Image (cartoon, rainbow, N blue to C red; front, side, top):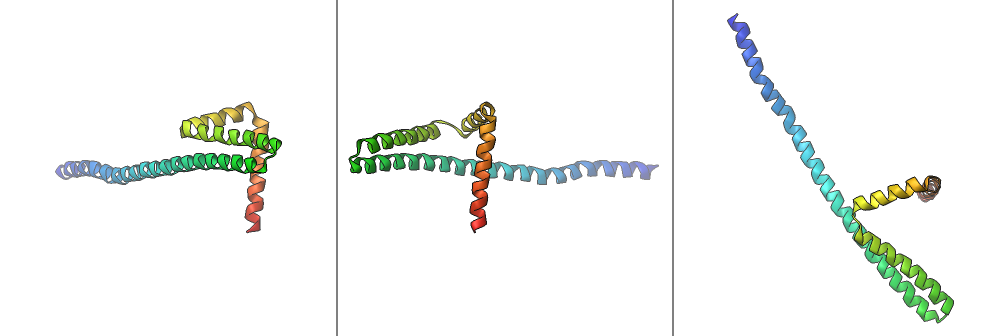
Length: 133
């Protein structure tokens, strides 16, 4: 009887140790996952800022080259295109990733067929690019 009680006490003491041993790798994994998410978010934010800067620089180049032509119609069309690029840059600068995701979801819900066609077109384009390699 004493052996059985001692065995239960010993097993009971092992349970917290085993739980702790199992919890430590899970805690470490969760910590690494948070770190990866933080790094990924920083890189995506950096890419978003870089894209906005490139859009503004492209708009400026379009205007500059259109002015060099001296053609009023080219200048008008180029100004329209440059304004659209600047609006896109402002949009990227003024929105968080979550807001951009919500906006994209809203557009897809409002235009489901157009979204499917756009996704299909992008998929075909990527497929053609990958096939050439």
